[in-house]
Amino acid sequence: MKRIALFFLLSSFLLASCGSNSSGPDNTSPKIYIENKGSDTIVNLALAWAERYQAEHADVRISVTGGGSGTGIAALINNTVDLANASRQIKAEEIEEAKSKGIEPVEHIIARDAIAVIVNSNNPVSELTLQQISDIYSGKITNWGGVGGEDRPIVKLSRETNSGTHVYFLETVLRLGNNEDKTLFSMDTLLLPSSEGIISEVRDNPNAIGYDGLGYVPHDVKMIAIAIEEGAPYVLPSIETVNDKSYAIARDLYMYTNGEPTGIVKDYLDWILSAEAQEIVAELGFVPALTPSPSP
Amino acid sequence: MEKSLNWREFIITSSIKASGYSAIVFVLLIFFFLLREGLPTLGEVEASSLLNIRWYPIENYFGILPLITGSLIITLGAALIAVPFGIGTAVYISEIAPRWMREILKPLVELLGGLPSVVLGFLGILVVSPYLRVLLDLPTGLTAFTGSLLLGGIAVPTVVSVAEDALDSVPRAYREGAWALGATKWQTIWRVTLPAARSGVLTAVMLGVGRAIGETMTVMMVTGNAPVLATRLGSIFSPVRTMTATIAAEMGEVANGSTHYHVLFFIGMVLFLISLVVNIIASSVVFRAKKRAERILS
Image (cartoon, rainbow over all chains, first blue to last red; front, side, top):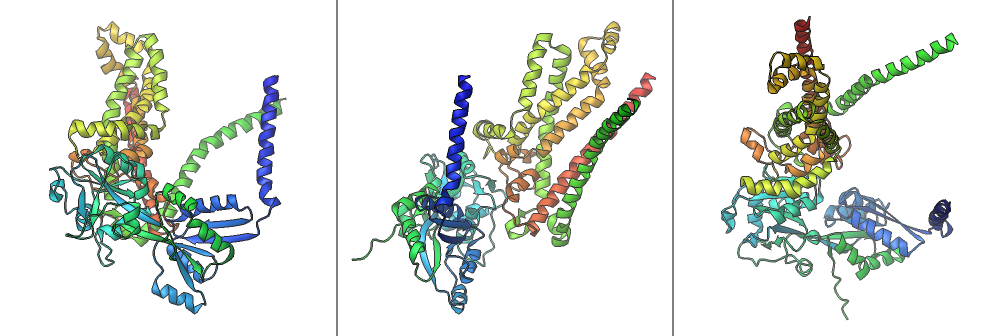
């Protein structure tokens, strides 16, 4: 009997708390809406930010949707969003189109995305040039001996083709940023469905080479120092080298606004660059954007 | 009274009939759905390009041959493991094991059948594949063979429980007759019990193979998913990509109605046709076996 009473007590508490949660927003009905749309790479980050920001500002509602960088910028040009997310810089013709419609796109770097190339911690190879990585993944180099390592076959690991990281790696590393280049991943590249799959295989297999977002790389695998070309310095990925642009496989992630942001959008963007919001960036595997200290 | 009984009879028999026909209806509906979504492929992608050896959908390479050979080689490997092992276990449980052993083994095998395949996938990634890589001195442990081993493990419980039921239903008189003629235990099993249970055992094999070819999660986790055309038997020790893993990995991100989307459904169609062919072969073999057995008995 007691137990039943306790059960009712508990469930009534639960119901009560549910009730107050769902009715909460109604009581302080949101007054301000922010529309945020664009890159699928950023969508999770944008959602995490939006959730945290809304938790602190009950009167703001931020709606986040993906669709791709192009979609976001197009929506900004059509003036249907307040913030467009993009994992690439806006193109010149997009700026022109925007200006013809009276929109003034303003760029904000909100985070950075870097890809670390990783190998087993027992692999003696610790430095590669971009060209060497490209040759490994396209199948021109198939033995670690070809890049100064032991006489072992190279097992290439990649994310699945639907991952944004896969496409970025293809364009930036395999094709060395050259649009005309039609180099493809070698057919025997293992396509693993998750970051965790790549890391556990690299951790275990001395033949393996893989890549992953810098934030996801654990300490028990070895990151490769990368040189843009032969003779150039080999650079290990880190928050510092990504921010000073000396590390090659990194890109900026952007948000675009129409004109200099004002009001709540400005507050939101300022908050995004705060230490609290940039901590979320690191949690999601991106690199925090270090804001240059304001010049005196 | 009479009338209400009739009515009840009518409702019950027709609802049973309806559930029987529903299986046919569902299969047909699924097939038409696959056709509707998959057939546009033939208009969008040239046949020669479908028969290409490169699968790289984001750059419009839609060669499905590597996926087909990948699925086939893994299923073949799994069948080679599951069939002897499964039938052996079934024979042991049904014919040889003492009663108490049988009562422990049977529920255990069924429990094994209930293991979620994703759990086996974890086991494959963390235990089986590193172990195989060192043992067989392979470049990587994520190979078709690893997939076959685990799929064999998944198919064994199916084979065991169906084959065991079939062996169990062989009349005791058959065995007693064989013993009376002086046959040993092995001779009785090999020459009398197994042939008498042949159709059931074949069904068990087919269900096991079906289980293996349709399995997705485990193979996606342990076979490496590299779309390489498997041309030799040695390919079993290199990574492959199966049809099921391709659909599972790519369906989530593909744009609805795009060529890639249609090709994925086309792969689904091919899978459906393969299992249809396997089933037709199986049932024709089973029917023929029955006719012969009937001839002998009559």
